[in-house]
Length: 365
Image 1: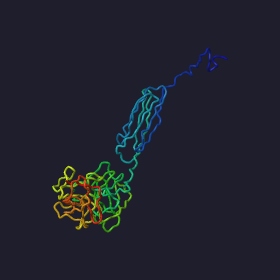
Image 2: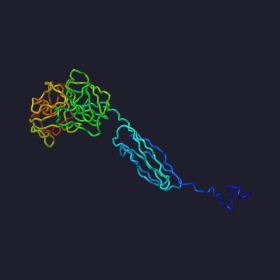
Image 3: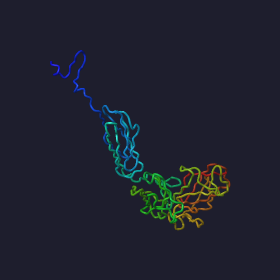
Image 4: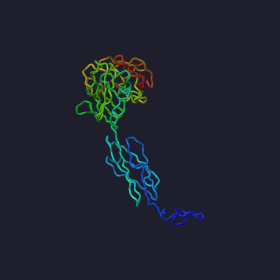
């Protein structure tokens, strides 16, 4: 066979290749995938850089609109055949679709761009958890809500990530009904707000619930509404404020107005000041969101208030709305003279026929 007519010739164990077939291919590279799409909360995605005869690559972010939400995770450079990760930092971006770009370059060869799309969907509407309407002092809610009671709502998406509290003294003299983009309606009427956060709202129920068997609460935040939550209305639902939300030591004051504690117990025969909410309607006309007078007269509950300390009936020397506070009832109770010293003595306040929780204590010496 003529030597110039063959393509390959095996001779003496050597393979000869025509010069036209031995020509080296030019260096090249390619990135995969060529585009990325993220939705808020998505995990990082991997980009691979492949090629032949190419030196190292490097990747960089073209500053996108909306801020520094596009991130290259290390490594941002390396040999062909390697990879890098791309992730997203939401950073509080508003709802919408954002575009960005990543440039992958190889010296002497060129640049390839990866288009990145970031979709920020609308946040879910506010959601009040099942059983999430509770007394703000005791965190109990199974019995229902009472007129004028301070209640706490627990849920998701109820307000801003950082909590916002109503000012101690407002220009109008009332608690606001809108706070940090949050409002709550009770039977269609705006409720006064103490505190709002994405997982919690504290508000005061209106006093004119007495003629109704139920109350419908609905949360509005940044233009979105929760599903209505219906809770029963009761005449009273007393809850004593404590130092911890699970109960225990009452947020009580001794007769000299010093905090009651195991280190500062009340003496037998002395008066302890208790603070609670959920007393129900008052003898005088009251408006939700308005503080009680600082110097009296102090509105008293419509129903009878009684108390016990350690299971022993204790004399109530005063029961009226706490001076300068909103929705808080102050009950002064005399420790029985015959009481023996104990660090954690159960104290119960009864309004009408409704009792406070039995897990609240005071210290007596």
